[in-house]
Image (cartoon, rainbow, N blue to C red):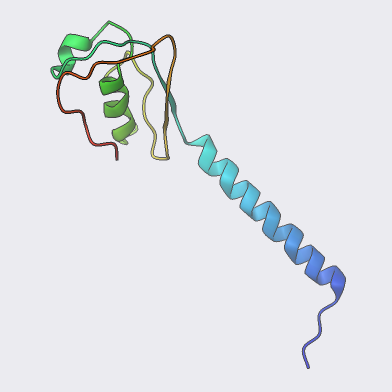
Length: 103
């Protein structure tokens, strides 16, 4: 018959909780927060340069996981983890052409 001491079960549960928390913190540390602060849109991304971070540029940087400098420096660089795109000072965006698939 297999028996477990209550103290061993508690210790195992505490260790499992600590491991899950550590893994979650490690994952969160790699995520990027990219803030859209421009309502501008243009299918030609080069035309958006220097006008703040547009939604199109934010998606492009979030999709880019090469770890180098951002393709569109108006926005933060994306990460290998799940990125968050948020909005600041932008109430609406008129998309002029098909937008990128978010990966």
